[in-house]
Image 1 (cartoon, one colour):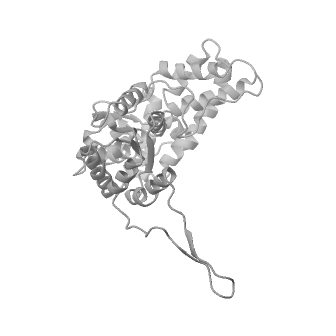
Image 2 (cartoon, rainbow, N blue to C red):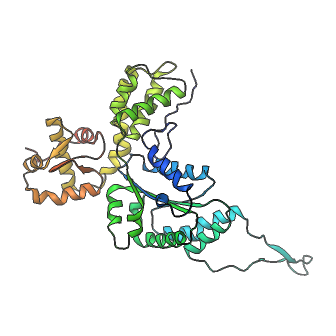
Image 3 (cartoon, helix red, strand yellow):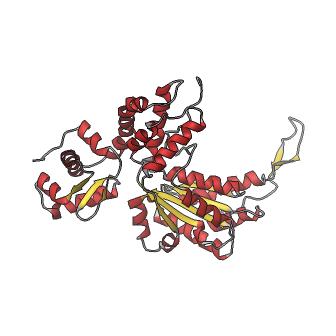
Length: 376
């Protein structure tokens, strides 16, 4: 077994070798693509926290569309998104389907007596609107359609989204073969849904991704390793699955590290145990550290208090009452901080009067990095 390639893929956005827990989304979307224009599930939104698998799922949806012969147009939620689609992305796809006419020589003379002259066979057209570009692209296709995907939609300019929405709805009214799939952080997506003129977003099929079940995490670990010829020993995958807490990035990371540690033998519980600290440290560097980089002092103080209380109670959720006691401030003074941390995707509501961290092991990371401040 020496020299086998590691089948786990702990890279953000990279599709795993084995899927578990997201088949409902993939199956419903595949059905929508094959059901003709007008199917309500041809426009979907995927939301969730960092590392939960949004981009990976968006990539899988693209693969499902390509498998049915569809053309995929990919965008990212940044400034000028609609303009980039109109002036660059879609024209490049059209060009790949039907190359533009080449220059032709219209006159030639011997050196010293004249010069070479060339003309374009067509005049440069005026740049059309997005909907016109899409109509042009669809006109090149036969028996298939166009899927537009937008990642990091929470960063999108509302004006860009409006332009895309108008174009998409115009095509839907014309019974065009189009579909639209978007992905973004939960709170950012929710804010977009509340904007005036976001009706088309609210009509889209909305999937909010949560953690995998532990059974799905175990199945992913077990099947991925076994398919590549290096299985987990009894109990090892179960232990690894518990460590992941259902977090897709950790599933791939723990599987990757344990695979390498096992060498040319089966993956044992001891292998998983020996890499657990490294996996959690890597999660901290890759996910927690960037998330905390721009957090203001008051919000960081709130997070440190949560981490301290969590370690004392042994419970994943922290009550608002405990936070007010620890920080010495009333609930009303903390509500704004709480809301901003939810918007940052660092904490989530966990029932009446309670919150918890949005990502696994964030409390551990905070306790290791810096002790809590102003906590009684």
